[in-house]
Length: 365
Image (cartoon, rainbow, N blue to C red; front, side, top):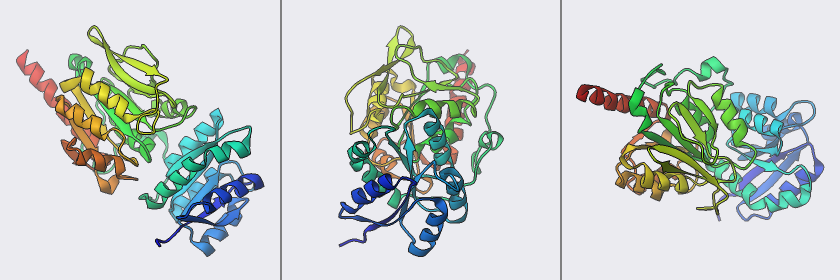
């Protein structure tokens, strides 16, 4: 029998600690080896027990979860799954936690806590399993200026102009899951103000994509927002699938438009990368660029191959830079990748290719 995943639960609520411990201990492949009601107790428990994964509440006495997470990821990086609340404040703090290095989060309900957490049991244990195999790196907090600077290894700084008239024809499609919020940030901060339109599906529940979009909008030269059904998709903008919906692109005359609806889950996901990429294959064809970033599972891999068959040019994040290599691995296995690159080289490679297309257009003119 393989080694069990050893989990420590940190939460100031005795009820939540009990429920999470029970859910974990019901699994054949994991065990709760300790619970703590505040980060200072958790710190000692981590030293003594050396757990594989930590679940961490945000609001706790003596030291809040974000302060503790920041210290933990600087001094002893380890897989952490945040337990967030379904509030605007909870969403903002969760984005900060992911920036600091948390692998993923679970959004617990504000009312009906016991029933709500039990309903989330399968999601909780799935995220613990993913966290246990994630590539966790030491992370330091970023300020806005630092976040706007290309990472080491990137070969192209953000440009003020890029494409001009050609940017209305092109469309960049990004799919991501676990670890994707920071991977998407790294790509978007390098995109110039007149970038082609960018459409994004990041696996995320309702209530969190608003904060995600707002956070990115404050860091990027392009405008970043949640997609709204029926709106025109414009150059210089990035559109994020709202959590709990399906997002696809369609045409209205010469324009691309957003379609956001309450469709069924695809590959267990809503939003699903498969839905977005399949629409790009059908509607955008050779004017599309696909980017597959870190994430667990195979969502979007088959549709990314459809994009390639329709003429798109596709970039896939390499294993070494992924938090979880599942979705990129599947895209590669489907023959969907034109280039497999470290995260910090994807934007610069895309910009170089787009500039080449612009130069060819100007030469013809």
